[in-house]
Length: 470
Image (cartoon, rainbow, N blue to C red; front, side, top):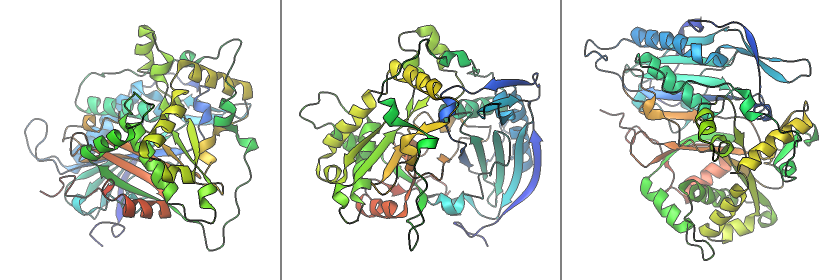
């Protein structure tokens, strides 16, 4: 059974509930208007650690039992401040989700996998990670799985409810959890002040938000299954070198009408948009539309010009996201240069990186409550053309998720979320400064096209690249 890929088994050896070691009084925490834009979906993350050789005091080698014990104890400590993760989501009288902070705890699972870290096909998380090394959440808001590998390495996997936390919030929690394990004070204490995202009176919003967000009741019915089966979504993990990112940025910035150098994220997203558009092979495909959204974090935008609010927003725990998107004809995306596409990305982002955009979005949700809504791009992949969302994980502090036995050899989000749009998240690489690790959840045909046409940019993550082979 050994080896990597799908040919290994995982055996659960212990399961328990971990609650905050100092529980607070049970109370209700309302979700903010920006939380209410998230459907009930779970997000996973995982961190791979090589076998540690010495413990923090220079003594004997760590055992799996001692490492699991450190994680369990530090989790109970971290949940004192991050009590939202120990609660449960319930519906209120009008059917909206609310958070009951009752310290019911976090499912904490210990497991053993009969595979070595360097044999895992981390490039293909559908085989190596899904259903094996990240836990499926049965209840509550967060669950954790710690898996011992045959080589002595460890994988720490977490799954959380996206309605309660965005990637920024999850990142805060992970860093705090590691700080607790190292007996350090918390560098950031999370804030749950929902008043920071209060509505305005009177409320107002730009009509463009009606194009960006949609009431769930207004969505068309799901498409009927296609004969022969539709192209399935698959997940892959690549790395992109710093040199390739610089080259893409240079090519994306060669534009007559632009004096502004495009960011690496804009340049990367533009290249990906072109690739996905070029992968379409259908009758009249060039007349179809391809949509791409980029997740924008509103913390800095909402506190623009206010230093006090900036400090509070930096520690805000919850969702502060918007997903503006652009749409272009496929033939334009295929034929125009990268700089033209990057200008289009910059243009549709420009309207959403403002304080007014986020205040307007809060008011838009209020105007439609209690009817649930979501970002239109999430349900946009359809017969009118492909769609994808890019979410920057550049603040994903992989190197800080050190529980005492070294930094992770790889840390990544895992989000096969089941929508009609693809999802791509670039994160900093732990293996080489300036490189990106890129999690991709796209249609199989799109992945195959990208691997053929852009193999020089997107390179499969390997044990050699991650320095897993001693």
